[in-house]
Amino acid sequence: MPLFRAALLASLATASLFAQSATVLVLRFQNNSTYSELNWVGESIAETLRADFAQANQIVLDRNTAMAGMKRLDLRPEANFTKASIIRLSQALEADMVIFGSYDVKLPPGVSQLKESNIVIDAQLIDIRKLQNAPDISEAGKLSELSKYKQHLAWQLLTYMDPHTNTTFEQFMTGRQATRLDAEESYIHGLLSTDKEQQKKWFLQAANLDPQFVSPAFELGRSYLEHKDPKQALMWLRRVPASDARYLEARFRMGIAAYQSGDYNAAVGYFKEVANVMPLHEVFNNLGAAEDQLNLPPAIDDFRRAVDGDPADVSYLFNLGAALLRRNLFEEAQQKLQAVIDHSPDDAEADDLLAQAQDRRVSPPGAKPLAPARLKTSMDSTAFRQLKAMLQPKAK
Image 1 (spheres, rainbow, N blue to C red):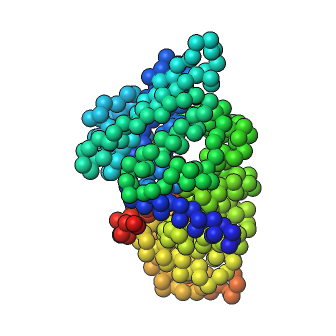
Image 2 (spheres, rainbow, N blue to C red; image 1 turned 90 degrees about the horizontal axis):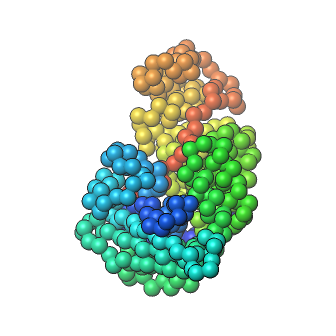
């Protein structure tokens, strides 16, 4: 654990180089070439920018949030948006800045393989707060070195977002590695696939092509966790380093995987690590559940923190009510469990526990939990970062 914490502190120190946090929306780049088989490149550029911005302490709206915003405004994700539509989408998602662009690919004379073609990437940034355009930024070179040009583009955009930074490109690239083109392509095909099994195959192919590529490992960990395979989930999520912006989310999911596999001590460790940096109520809920399995006294306090964070969440109320009942605190247990029933009258588990509380059915010391805890399977780190950016002064 000390090694992970040290790496995390190093990551935060690097992120402070770009401390002027903003909520950023990044859209898929438009393919202006004649090669439709390279449509994946536009999503690849957007994914790299999102990852690098998040790692540099910007608040980045993820791809799913962008897609949900498009659906709300009846915008087709594959369409080429007008600037008016882009601004409208950005305002609907409350983004401070939006980044979009295009790319063109041409084969040099005598060259037949697309990976040896030349690519030109043009990026545009609009400051939504001022409705002001930044100067266009371009990158050009071999498609086979796409990873390098995407990262240089990210550095240039970050320099514009925070003009006071003096971070060189060499400093920015510390800890970052170029990714193989075929691995990037496989990963993006996985992201765009709607078939879960096919998606997993794409991610596995990407991870095998480039074992240092973190993104497919993270997605595989998430996929295996959804399919109740905690052993595989842990194996893949361990590949996410502390320098990666998804590290805390990976540790949160590792806590769930450890819990599912019955290793409650490990689950407590993972959830505590996340809670120390992001004190979110869903993290405290899961931490309380792991502690409760071990009959640890802090479980009640952590369940209370979850309820304080969202008093209307019936999962938090149920977990706290069950833990109170197990400790023979009948009156407060009744209060919490009754709130669950008021919201969900058909909740048979809560109804059974409420009856036990009303009958004052005593649990012996060291008794096991009276009902399976209700864990949260995701954490809202974006909202936390937005709130933190509002409340804390900007670092110099």
